Amino acid sequence: MTSENQPVRSVAVIGGGPAGLMAAEALSRAGVQVDLYDAMPSVGRKFLLAGKGGLNLTHAEPREPFLSRYGERRAQIEPLLDAFGPEALRAWARGLGIETFVGSSGRVFPVEEKAAPLLRAWLHRLRESGVRLHARHRWLGWTPAGALRFETPQGEQAVPADAVVLALGGGSWPQLGSDGAWVPLLMQRGVEVAALRPANCGFDIGWSEHFRARFAGHPVKSVVASFTDAACVVQRRQGEFVVTASGVEGSLIYALSAPLRDEIAARGVAVLHLDLAPGRELPRLIDELSRPRGSRSLSSHLQSRIGIKGVKTGLLREVLAAEEMADPLRLAAAIKALPLRLVAPRPLEEAISSAGGVAFEALDARLMIRALPGVFCAGEMLDWEAPTGGYLLTACFASGRAAGRGAAAWLNAM
Picture: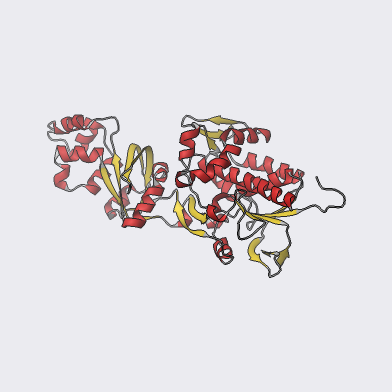
């Protein structure tokens, strides 16, 4: 609490996604006056889009596999989740009147499944607590005197603040506000920023015109994808993906996108292997495919003997030569491990999320930038990544809370 002789400290939170809103909430609870700025006409636009088909808020899997989803940045993300993890996030949502449930895959959703009710309740609570929201305010950096510069409908404005929390997102979906325009602003101040790269993204393959025209947009279901990385570690996932005009995308591809992207960057290509018939052993496939097919076509033979049809048959024909298709041994081997050559990730602006950002090494334990005292960072603009499935949102909420609490602690110590 502040005394009558001590002015109320003010903090500017820049960015109205989950991380920024959570930082604003933490600061408001600490008795700080919070002004939240967002470049878009309203806050939470990417959050609303993420919840359009069902808001995957977090995941209910055990702690160890949950933490493993953060890869090389697990050590930095773990303390944030220890302070505000999946169960705490579900309890927080319950406090907003939003009950959640665990789906069959372990993913956690609001009962209503949409993001809009949660966002409405959250914004109402923030306004009631005194948080002031400023839309159409694009951050431009600092004035020579240290004030924050904003481009607004009324022209450029300079705003003083006792501390700042930056929660500007990464570089994916720039039309919703995450355009990475903050990168040069921080680098000019000597802040270490890793280049932004696509994460949870699709990949280009370069289909033949025949395959693209016939199968673009078709889902490929019930397959296992595997990839062997540079350290000879085999990563394997089961699920489904979608054939696109240029290559592949979808949840199964996103789950492996980080090592695939890095392999392409290092070697120019990444080879993903597909098991098109999970649960069927290779000897049995060879036996089934070796049976006489009489007057039936190979496509009919594949469908009747092993259930391979449609886009899966198309994939086999796209990758294999005619003589391989006619050889039961080679065809069976391809069904169990069909190689797809991925040549490039899709552009950053198409990705669900981004990797890269402000290096954790440039921050202290409170998520304050060491080179810029009083400036804190949170959310996707930090250098970490995670697959879809609730992991991204959970860490965004947790880092926003940590940055807000860190800024409040820093102000109290001044």
